[in-house]
Length: 259
Image (spheres, rainbow, N blue to C red):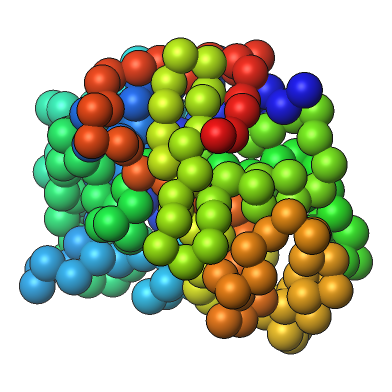
């Protein structure tokens, strides 16, 4: 039976995430604290891993309440603890020194700052999928695949690509029950340059997207809506909240089913 095997929150966009036992779905469909903050330059443009591989060496760890973050980056930037509420300017100075240009930390506590404004809900993948994808690339372990693809909900107890059941043909959504929570599965997530890089160093994996797409095409399960794949560089499922969405809590171990 499919269940939630792990939950991941990524508080600062493009920085490392934190494994949690519970996660609250807010009214907008996003997870509380997920992508709540983003690094921007002085013009307001987001500084993320799509824009620069320099973001990968930054380590970020959080306390359980997501009130404090510890940032570090190599020998020049030793670990330093900041309050996310009270030391915003200090965080911005640290980031500005690291990147070499002025940075600001912006916040949206209600909706987060998602890439996909139409489907801002948690992304879903299975552990078996990540294990299989990791096997396609020598030297890439499942933990590294997890860091590269950065899904929020990881499913246990299912075969690879089981999550491809969570969306329908073009124009249709599927209703996903995660314990007492309900989400709409929208589409397989289109990937960008980020998964092609080592998550800790930013070093590029040669021909990553090409090799991934070849394997994805060859292993596409019969239950996947094939018309959703205008290309095969897609992994995990995007979700959004149904119109009647209410605040709900996801828990590791919750059963997962699709209607």
